[in-house]
Length: 156
Image (cartoon, rainbow, N blue to C red; front, side):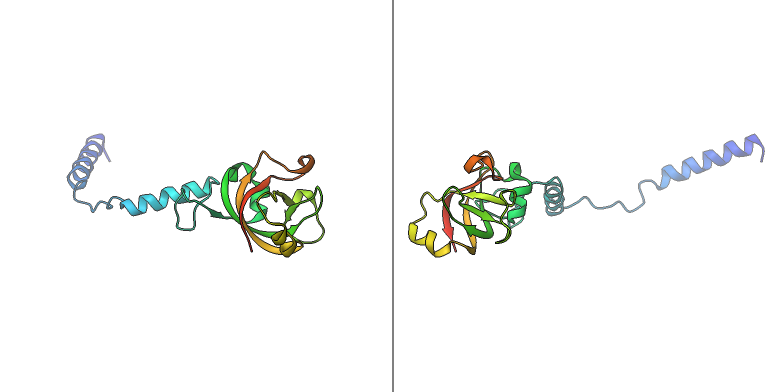
């Protein structure tokens, strides 16, 4: 192919490309709902909690105890509902991942203030669901625990 033919071919392709650029079907812009879903998924992938209804601003989060222990900074000062094995004893009130063996590293301190002695006796050494506020900076007796559950609203 000679240089003149090559230049002509390139010009023809450029003209055809320019003429058809506006005629190809464009992808529709994402809907507002799809943008919201995409941003919430990005929020979750970044490691931030989502509410049960898929939003980020809820009054209480349902969370696994191992998640509280693994990432206390994410859950700090949040109202949570969490399941675990409640064990209450002098200087050892805690919600554990399981009932045996008990390791401080697998537990959060359980602040009994506001929990009646009757409820404490009823739920001691039982698997429970607790609703309370998680504080990462308060680590219980001798700072042995991953954080503290306080302002207990419910134990069942």
